[in-house]
Amino acid sequence: MTNVQLLILFFILGAITFAQRLSFIALFGRTDVPVWLIRVLRFVPPAVLCAIIFPDVFLINGALVLAPSNYRLIAAALAVAVALITRNVFVTIATGMVTLWGLTLFTA
Amino acid sequence: MSSAKTEFLAGVRATMPILPGVFPFGLIFGTLAIQAGMQRMIAQSMSALVFAGSSQFIAAQLIATTVPAGIIVITGAIVNLRHMLYSASVAPYLLRYGWRWKIILAYLLTDEAYAIVIGRLRQSLDDAYRLQARWYFLGAGLAMWCTWQISTALGLFIGGTIPTSWQLDFALPLTFIALVFPTLKDRSSVAAALVAGTVALPAVALPLKLGLLVAAACGIAAGVLTERSRPTVKR
Image 1 (cartoon, rainbow over the protein chains, first blue to last red):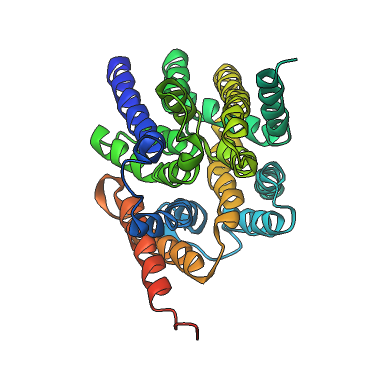
Image 2 (image 1 turned 180 degrees about the vertical axis):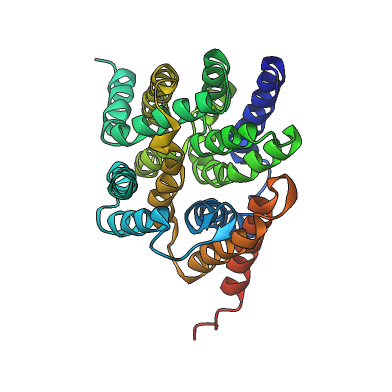
């Protein structure tokens, strides 16, 4: 994409994001927030996040690899453990990256 | 010191503890944007225009793989849908604010700002106190905004010097692993997460990177269905 195309794309993406953030702030008092919408929206973060995480962790070049040769899987498993214990974003990322680097260097 | 200034600074202070977690996220985005072939000013303008980390990550990834712009917009919109939830949640407290305030605060309504501000908003019982809370919101939002812009800029400058062998793209799923656990509040949100993740695996074969959207839709459906089919508790 050209720079102009990218800027237009980001402008549209930004406008949509802003509209989503403003949505109920603007509408409140004029219309009720539909209960079904709130119920559906609640599941967006876990669904979207896992739809991104799983392929990045379980697949290598599009193929499922559940063996120890999948370093990203091992690194992610440790990161999950750390996320559960510490609830700290920074420590979770650091654990995963350091594990992946360690495994890559160790076997290089 | 005026109470507006006190509130503003209190908002900034409340945001401080989470900024060390935000900074690397922006740094990594800047790096990935460079690796995706974006020019610095273009990537920086994305952080200013969109100002939503996870969707910027995904969009940068999709741009690198030359997916049609329409798909990038739809994917970004779905990833950012959760902001409507925050909007609904803060809306009652912002009811008496003027339009200018509503627009500025909506622009600043990130995941982090929401998490910080909602506690302060819920404390405000009377109108006068509630009106002061907008300065707290502004303080928290601007602290986040500055951190995001500066960390993006820094990532853009060091980005070119980091070799791809460092596999920094793996920071994306790692960040999301850290973010997903607080959203798993009950059985149906776990169902949404597991179904979306599992469907996403075969769905990578779909054209135009549509797998993410299909998997997310299945996950959301699983969440709604398991919630409805829950046995009714005795009243």
